[in-house]
Image (tube, rainbow, N blue to C red):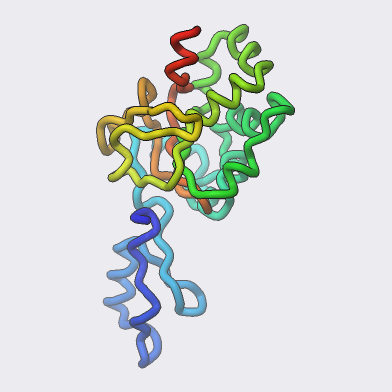
Length: 214
């Protein structure tokens, strides 16, 4: 997976001890970090971030469990629950919004790309519509799983037509800080968790079939 590449392998240890300073500096510049035992190299969680809102996100949550570095330490449902911009999404996937819709274990059980609407995206939905959706377990599940794609896709490979867990396709266009997921703009994407790559988006996506019916 490209998002997890970039570290040095274990087949080139320095038999003389620590790496030369120049080599250490080069590794740091490439985003790698040496573990305490001198083993694997881990990539900087912020190395692949894209989106015009990444700086604001970093300023809002500079450290702790909800920061870029903090989210990389947890499964995606836990990481999302620690992010102050994803409180509504967290309630929706955890069974809090509707006890019959609890997707946390599913989302934590495999590798995914998750398009995560921020709280402002849910706030833009009329209250009556949001209440109706929350009470419809089947409809809520359809909407939530439409935001999830199997496998982890980094920003440089995300563009194109993707088949969601819900079953219908979503189109990702643009590149860099101008990525769009359907009609939603990516605020900050390429955010790593233990098992998923997350793209914070500014609009709640509706599956095409539901949009036509609505």
